[in-house]
Image (cartoon, rainbow, N blue to C red; front, side, top):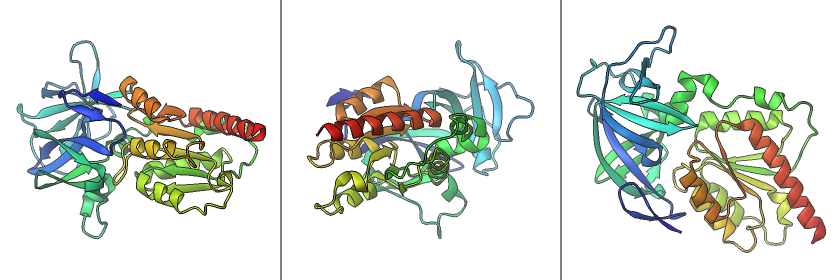
Length: 311
């Protein structure tokens, strides 16, 4: 599938590529997935909100939408005065619009997910917890920030809530092997805890699509596949291999294509939904709807069992 993006560049789904918008804070270079960005604008006056997180400046209202503003320099511990020349990056993910204050915005670079490495904990310092990866863009090292983690820390009520699973009531223990690709350590733990709460107890967690794919390919050919992996859940944004590339590989493979696959991502828009559908994803859900994810898992596994019993 080929489609035109905001910059008029033809992009093919499932090629394992990403467009990074680079920006600076305190002279340091950071990046954000262009798919999360809706608008770039000069900073505007902000109305403070009482009892907000220390990194939340307040709200402002461009046109008809009230948007929360996060002071990203403050969150990252960069001591710098606010300036009228600062930039607001307006983002949209997890069904929320949020503005992040930054100092300057650089150009957009298109790179492969294989060029993005997980930061080394021994050298990454304080940014490790909020860095989803380190990328080489145009000869410069860029820290790709984990914006989902930032928002989950600032506003926990907007992230995955295990209470959604508790509201489903008592559930039968399910030993079917569920494979999950999620690079964020925080979100991986939240998803794992929630699925175990739903009595899905046989979980295999992978930090990116590449490691899940390599584990799939390593399964003995003589094994009954459904005993090794009954269902796959994948994020989209991941270093080394993204969820769209993983989906394409699984669904184009003669042995693996029957495995139910769910894309569970903060980036599910109509455009992303179309891409995922064309690549063969069985379902696509928006984070943080964990209760809905459990319902869909139940349905897909039941459907998978019926298809195999007929076979």
